[in-house]
Length: 119
Image (cartoon, rainbow, N blue to C red):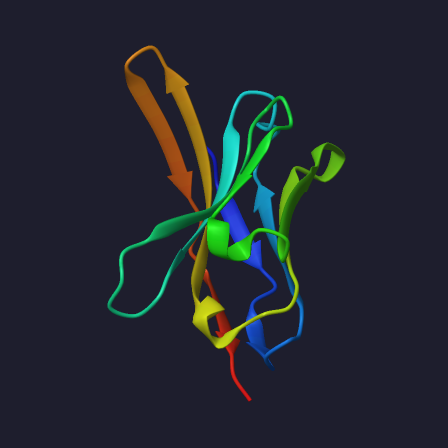
């Protein structure tokens, strides 16, 4: 079992920055892909950024060049640095740990943190 706890959300003006943190209850980054998802009101949850155990990353096209996912293995924490924020980035952001073992999928989720971009 893995517990994930997000922090760092809040209200920010357009063009501003926020850094989200996701702390894991144990060391998992060597075997779990860490992802950030977001869900805006009335919309489906979507993948924003992912960081594989080997270090490769992927991003939603609309956040490329503005968001950066990273991790600190010693702190069991993954981050999402969000720059040049836009109103359309407003959503609840969720941290996810994902692993495939054969046909079995293992997923853990944090409780979510609200990000609001508004003037």
